[in-house]
Length: 176
Image (tube, rainbow, N blue to C red; front, top):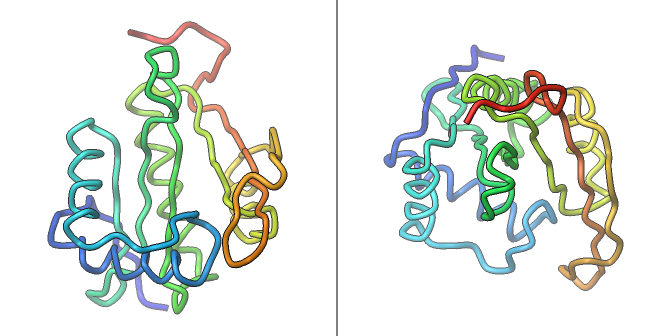
């Protein structure tokens, strides 16, 4: 495989990001959206995350955007301000090449540097063994499984919650 370049997202990346995400919405259970957003909606989502200072990176192989990863607020209430949720999507033609792991590690490192203390993964299907294994390799621990929480493709889906500490985690007080 050619070298993977990881760089911050730019708005010109949105069509390629949305192509990867739309395929996921239509064929997989990682996202529980039923209809893919259009590029304008995806642009709003990217802009919102960037305006809040969350890390958002893309992976490029031979000038092609092949995956992306970002962190976002785990919950809106201020008590959760030191916890982020991660997201990762990779073009199916480029999966199982270490791209997801490299992108996620970049986001983990960026969140740690920003002072976040916990990262949560909300995996949208207990049958998504690849995502669960990826998160385990990156230091996440399964903390909950919420059965039959969502419904897509004619079946009930479980939501798997995984978590990992960032930096000192909960062992010391965070810096405000």
